[in-house]
Length: 94
Image (cartoon, rainbow, N blue to C red; front, side):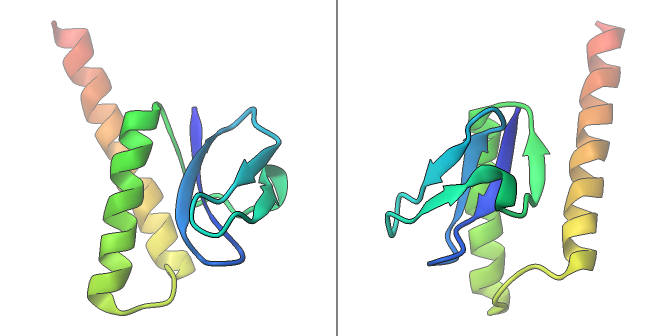
């Protein structure tokens, strides 16, 4: 599992294995303690995490918002959970 977090220094989204203790920001080099970083979402694999990070950055750039609101974060989690449920149902049918 991977956590999607945001650098407190430069505000860049990144993902980190949930067992990792520290994350070095690829943009500014800030070292952040993972347990102290707010997690936006927990996802299954790094490929999915990478895709979601790009979509999150794109959304904020498009809407010109500085960050996701608590409601938007909850909605993001809800949509991801629904996508996982649909994927699981398809897996049981095959």
